[in-house]
Length: 568
Ligand code: ATP
Ligand code: MG
Image (cartoon, rainbow, N blue to C red):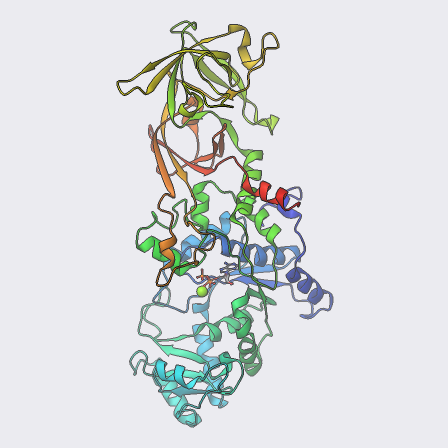
């Protein structure tokens, strides 16, 4: 962990059963004096998402707590789906999240060793070459209630198996014509133990080993042995691998190698969110979003572009911890941690998204002045800045009504309001266009209310943000909504695909926003609270003279409300 500030909120980690298990193993010296060794093992077949962030925080975070080490290992055993682009993005995202790996490893580094071990199992009569097709193997496997049936090739001699397996490796046979299977138990109640496939033939180019191999190990055969080679003590993975654990143990026991152990924890599921690389890839390929880093994506690169911070994501992951049963977390909880973080660190600024011109009739034309404004009321050390004020301003269209509905306290004819940090103003008259739309509001101001302070105890019910028209800089603003319309995107009608639950209005682009001039210096890593509007950050699509801001989140914290309702 690069940031080990004990005051940071994520340092106060709630307990979870994984930590308890590791603490127990350390106490009983299960692995002697060996350090706690973990690994984060992504397959480089897509970009990391917020679910991976949980696994990263668990693996790196727990190793760190126990003075141990974590490897980043690419589980690259599917050459057809894997690419170097994904490897690079994964490295970047792990570092962005605040973690540094001990060793950078690839399952493909172990192809030679895995092959040697496979030969060992063949020689010991514990693996055989099967000529059945994938379909036939599936049919022979049986079901949960019926035992499997032996392949007719199960009784091949060791010599024949050795010869065929070596020829498989030498490329003599076409794809799919033969596999190597472990010889375990076709009647096992665990289907994974019914002679699982260890190797398949695939004449494909691998992102690292190129054309060197034409047989590739299956996940189950590669994973445990890779852990063992790296002397991983705690191989933490998600619950869907629980049924694979007996097989994980079987290979390690047969080979008599370092006894890595697998422990399963719950997968992160978030409401309104899809966390499957395969499905996210489909969104990208079908151009339903603008790439893996589209700010609506739950990928780490999307969240980063949206303005999420590693600190908030780590604090969220620490809070959700780990459990032995799967559940679903409200996406509002992630947003709550992000707001909390941004509230502390974001620079305040004024920006008008839907501008309406205001002219202050009694303010001298051509005059300008600067009001002193705190950059972050939560953080006095953030200092102040000078914001220009002049006769012509922009306010939000929504902050003026010619005919105010009941309880509307913002600007309307005859009503006085405060322009934040500046003056009290009273609306006097409007100018309309040919269609009758208000295009300009004329006001008067009270010079004695400078700084937004009441000169005589007179109260106003509303304080509004504003931008000086002459000084304003234009910007494009991108507002985001949830990518899916249903809390469970898999809540589908008969025959529907999950993409039919995509929200058609997940992005809104505003091209006419007006910003206070200090935002011209915004940096990509900057975080802003546009007062009364939300949290924003600069988008990399920005260019000199053409600023684009993303709304990270609106200000309203719905999670705080949910928590309050639940009496938490
Ligand atoms: P996906 O289905 O999105 O492709 P995966 O499990 O196939 O996910 P991997 O690249 O194999 O993705 O995962 C690397 C590690 O991240 C694994 O240990 C996996 O258990 C973990 N992981 C993946 N998704 C989640 C999630 N939603 N919550 C927690 N851990 C996850
Ligand atoms: Mg996977």
